[in-house]
Length: 93
Ligand SMILES: [Ca+2]
Ligand SMILES: [Ca+2]
Image (cartoon, rainbow, N blue to C red; front, side, top):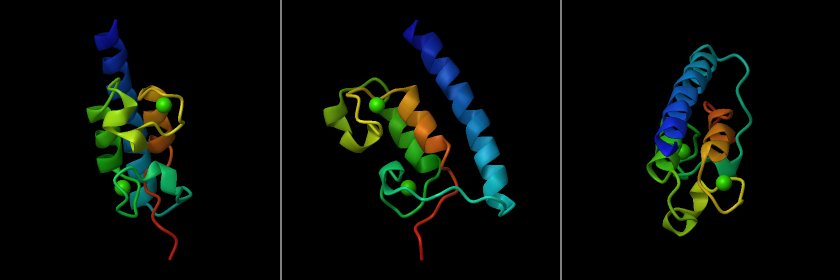
């Protein structure tokens, strides 16, 4: 069951990242930068932030407090989708 959910999560991530990348490379609507979604705190929201959440998927929040974006005590698809919807955002200049 967990493997199935994880597989679905990965597929969702691929689709959302593809859309995000398209938007980013075409400089159309740039998503709003929200510091909470910048998991690795490098001033952009990109694949690295998503990878960080995925690498802590279903792990205790204590292993990556920033990965629990919505603060519900679990690291799951909701956190992944919150970040993916802001892929392409960068720090305000
Ligand atoms: Ca980042
Ligand atoms: Ca969460």
